[in-house]
Amino acid sequence: MRPSHILLLLCSTALCSSQELGSTAAFEDGENGLSSRLWLSGQLNIVNQSHPGFPAKYSGPNSLNNEPDQATTGVATLYTGFALTKHTEFFFDLESARGAGVSGALGLGGLSNLDAVTDRLATTAPYVARAQIRQIIALGHETEEATRNPLGLATSVPSRRLEIRVGKMSVTDFFDLNSIGSDSHLQFLNYAIDNNAAYDFAAGSRGYTYGVLLEFYHPGWVLRFGEMFEPTDPNGYKTNWDLLRSRSENYEVEVHRNLVPKRSGVFRLLAFTNHADMGNYPDAVSAYLLGQDPRPDLAAHIRNGQMNYGFGLNGEQDINGTFRLFGRLGWNEGSQEAFQFAEADRTMAIGTDFGGKRWRRADDRIGVAFALNGLTAVHRTYLELGGVSYLLGDNGLDYAKEKVIEGYYNFKVLHGIYLAVDVQHVTCPAYNASRGPVWIFGLRLHLEGDVHFN
Image (tube, rainbow, N blue to C red; front, side, top):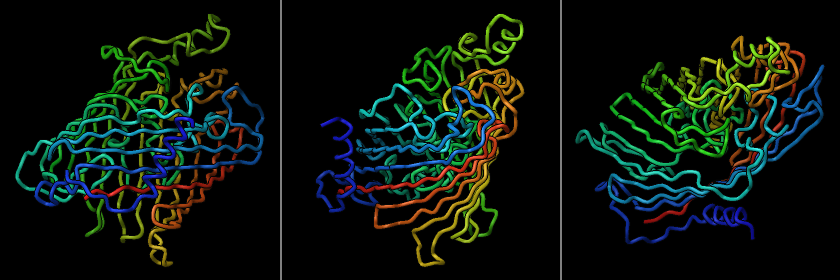
């Protein structure tokens, strides 16, 4: 049996297990803020996407395939957690992923499926997704309720506290979160809607990295800082451990303010600085125009320890308990190559979702969102001259902003089993008015479950 099959079997076991298991290592609920030392859960997410043929005046090596195409991705994750003490927790997650998505995850500024494996050398063998220690330091005596989840086991935490995490993690488990548009397994699928497309957060080919996270919680607001390692190559699977020239600083201020009386609202201001060995667009364009290179080539103009930086704004507001709104704005400096996420220097997204209570499907959800992505002048000049970048390369460019409209219906079949239909319409894919528009249709099966310990 292949290792990936073993992982899927383990996840299926967790998904199908709903019985209460005895545990002599349990904490008393309320006394220590923990109902159990242990956490075990699993999830399996399968997405099939397809698109019909669409008009294209020309194509290049990194173009979205203009012929009919379809692809399936699958991600299986086994989550484990253990409370070492009342305020110290350890998490270790295994994962297996397969499938690069339509066109091999190329040809869009904001890719259509967050589960797509962008590393062409990746295998389906299980890998360690997360391995981290969480330390909670109380800064006061008041406490508040907390919901147990794969990244936090305590059922009550100090209202004022410092949290420290060290180890392997996903940056977007903590930064740029949004309860309406962040979870591609139950919500939207597009990169530019579930995340800030201009936020080039540190991540290897599987979406994880190593680092340190500090979070200061105060009633009404949160401060976050993360120091993360960068990969050696764009979206590469090897980590560059040289902190002097390869690292990522991430900053976020989260403020809880309700614009609608008695309805929750959250707003987040994000900033990041990346230091890595990155290709430089101005150098590549200049060398080509001066006749030094036969074509624009980022790989020939990598500068060691270059810096890219950017900012983001993220907000969400509950309107009436069923209807919610969210939005994002993003900007990055854009003269260095896109290194590890979407390929966008400017982005805007706005959307909404509706719960199904009014049609007696309280656990169903409908979402609709729009995203607009753009490039800096030098980035688009590089593509206009025929350059190939991380995700893009049409052998030319008739520049226009990339526009994405996405809608989904997520249907709860049974407890822990969800089916969804998803439709995306992309105008000017890869910022090219000479290609598209294209419709992308998706079906998603999501299974999840956990084993309870008392």
